[in-house]
Length: 95
Image 1 (tube, rainbow, N blue to C red):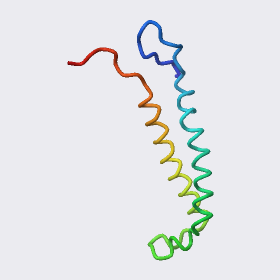
Image 2: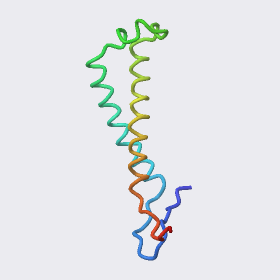
Image 3: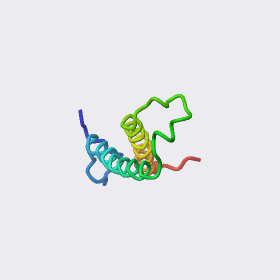
Image 4: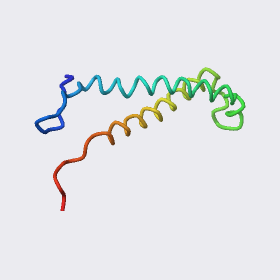
């Protein structure tokens, strides 16, 4: 299930298992999302943010939860894009 993926070529370093790559993206993004959630809700009260919206009946805990998952989605997508663009390009010339 967690088979290493090689990028091809003869002198490649050992391939990283898939689960290790997933954890390398999700764990740092989880930590940063937690910090972002703390700092955001220190500055902004969820009840005041939502009072004039259709979500005015959402509790503070619900707002904290939704905020955390939105921050986690944002930071994990950033980490995934970083990992994606870190991969080497194809070595063949495209002309």
